[in-house]
Amino acid sequence: MKTNDIRIDLPASKSMSNRWLMINHLMGSHFRINKPSSSNDTQLLRKLLQQLENQQSDVYYCDNAGSVARFMMPLLCLTPGHHILTGDTRLQQRPMAPLIDALRQLGFRIECSDEEGFLPVHIQGAIPTRRTATVDPLLSSQFVSALLLIAPRLPEGLSLTMSQRPTSRPYIDMTCDALRQAGIDVRRSSNGRTYYVKHFDGRPKASNITIERDWSSASYFYTMALLRPELRIRLIGLQLDTCQGDSAADTFFKMLGVESSEVRSPYRSTSRSITLQGGREPQKNIQFNCIDCPDLVPTFAVAAAAAGVHTLLKGVSNIALKESDRMQAICTELQRMGGKVQTTGTTLTILPAKLHPTEMVRTYGDHRMAMAFAPLRLAFPDLEIERPEVVAKSFPEFWDQFDKVKNNIR
Image (tube, rainbow, N blue to C red):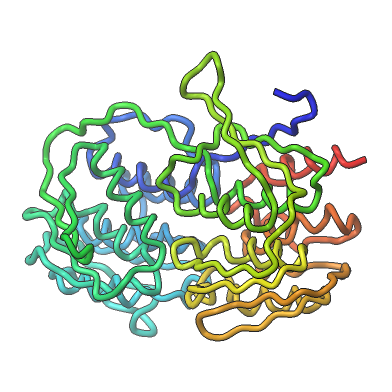
């Protein structure tokens, strides 16, 4: 390894951690989860599962964690008793209707307290009366994953059909992979539209699970490598052969001139890392479909704007429904810095323009906005990021790792 490599310690995958927490709870806590995510979302899910086990309260507050709320909803439906599922103001604005509708198809009783299709909801836990449902996955793949996670505990299993092509299919694949590792029979129809999960009441096949490093978190360091090509950044523990859809960052940044290579330890076969270095000539016009990796849209947009490369991002229709309205947030903050942005309902185009610093980048309470814009501080040292603590939702150690890069700039 080169002595000037900057070693970045990435967090464990939040998405993988949360799936394994759910599976472990449903399977009776039979296996050990090694090195799970330290993110706020994972800690929140762990807390709510403990609350459910101990029957401490019938109100389950999910703060602003959409995936946690969507995973908890089917679980509460399956748990006898009366439950209230709610969250903060932004979470109460995020769509839940497709999941609520599918659960009602299975015979579960859910009532929306205020507006139909949104939190808060009142749930009367019970055994389902049916085993088939159809779900619309366009707004979020989490609706599908949430249903698949409880499927092994349904008396007759589950036959779940998607009404159209899902957003973020790799996250559904991640759910299926985890279930299979636990010994659960999960199959998909030949047309890819229907999932079949058998009832499972045995002991899980898995005993020890080690969570992969997180590709979503890795993407911000690709932008740093782009902006500072004199630096060589090593992402410890990251691997290219993964089910994480956000590994698409590697493909996108190659088009912007960031080269990556995977390195295995000569001493440990399971120890890997990926090194990054910018400086190659970028493509002049880039088109990239983000339908399977919508969380990377802020990162891609900021990187393209910083590089001054004409970039068309497709498949971005659902990013307005995230922790913030990311479509509006990205456009507003880039335009404040001199960026030129065009948008339709399903595309986001970055036009070549020279960026200049503003006093502060607003983050709208969104962790991915904070981390996507943070690399620009390598070009504009006086740039401030509003509410930098929001990164704790997925990457609590982000600023410590960012400083490793910043402190190597001469």
